Length: 317
Image (cartoon, rainbow, N blue to C red; front, side):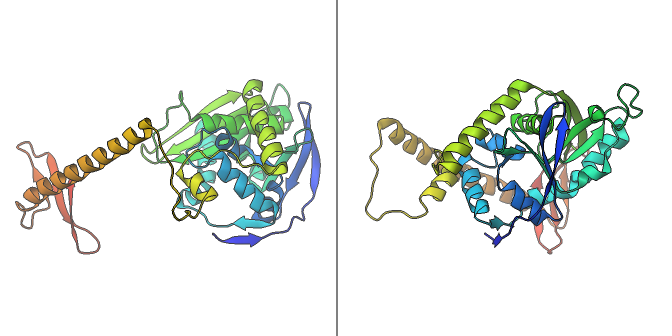
């Protein structure tokens, strides 16, 4: 990991939206933003702390936060993270152009919001937008005319009626911290090549659940230095990176059965892979320099094309 030291040196201004009072840090760089966010849990971390994220666990979040509080930051960026950052503006632009909700340009800056009564929790909305283009009810520039915009890019198909729960908690945390009562989740799915959006009204119960888990974890695990329970293999490697020579664990019958079933599945997988290779070889042997096999109606069944490296690749349609 590329851990680097950063010092915290940015200042804040007060905000008061719908009775929610807090402070806003507008950061001069991503490094300053990282330094400030180290002092609380963010909306994007709530799903992991609740145990409903596929990308992180409570233990991994806590360990990273401890490093950051000591001035050490990991700059390693996965491809998925990079894609999310690069496409964020495009997803927001779609909401504006196709749905008519004007994006507030200044909201693209690196900033962080933290409520005065919840110092353990912060939000950094991707964008903000105007709800009403003309603002006849409250005036366009009124805080009541603003909404939080959370931008998502994903490889999975997205059902607007069944969004990932972690996304919903993230958005409601942003609304609860910022004080805004409307929010959008806007997404682009690479698998279906489609955009979509859904508007939410602020739900106090959802936000309360986020606050409770963040407060409890901060008090126990950051201030109290307690580790959350491990929930996956990656957590075990964090806690126990080395084995102890000669140490064993005695398991019960249920675990013994699981081990036996795993062996059977691995053997079945091996036989299946061997069968797949055999069938593929039979089909490849029927090719000469053709690129595809077709049925009587001309429908392509499989291909055996040369790729950019000069190697032929077999693919069943």
